[in-house]
Image 1 (cartoon, rainbow, N blue to C red):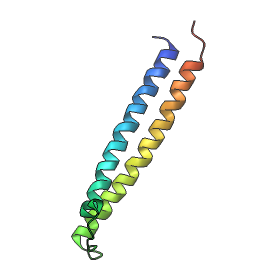
Image 2 (cartoon, rainbow, N blue to C red; image 1 turned 120 degrees about the vertical axis):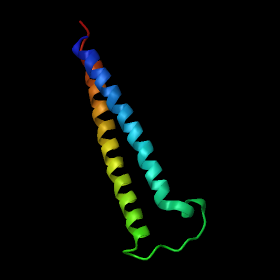
Image 3 (cartoon, rainbow, N blue to C red; image 1 turned 90 degrees about the vertical axis):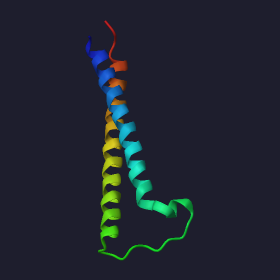
Image 4 (cartoon, rainbow, N blue to C red; image 1 turned 180 degrees about the horizontal axis):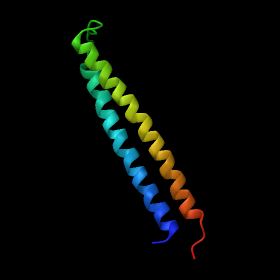
Length: 89
């Protein structure tokens, strides 16, 4: 396999990784919102309660996965572009 094909394949894998992390991040964000995502008014849990800590943990995980997915997608785009720009022999 040539260098161009390796770059395109690696870029595709990174794009797939970015998509998967975006889906997982969306799932965590939906779990954080709970019933509020359905348009139902709910009371927020008391700060420092176990439920509050769980929501904060899920929100932090969703944010982290979002940025990982964004970086993976950006790297995938760059690799695929470089693979496409290198002249085929």
